[in-house]
Image (cartoon, rainbow, N blue to C red):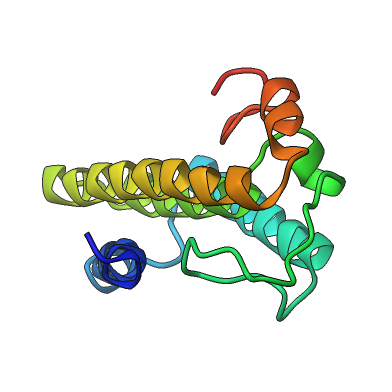
Length: 146
């Protein structure tokens, strides 16, 4: 499959799922559990963007030619904290206004992001010799778990 079609395909599914979840339920849940998950997920995302530096990241899984491998901040514990943030905040949206359809859309989003991570890691491995060692010492999305 064409590289650009694959990259844009991941992004279209990702943003389609996020928009669906935002459009079909409460953005600020009533219960404290989902609220806490939303705040923690949002804070993690902001922290990851700050470490990556605004304007230096890409929503597509493509690796910029001038990219630098980040291994500090949240990247010490997980290789893809921005994806972790997206999964946590959207799970909070589903938890706060639950339906099986919304859960199914979240599962589709999770699958899309897992496939996107695998593809992105392939590209990162090609660009950074140090990526193999980084992969061995950190988890993909959930610290100490996955």
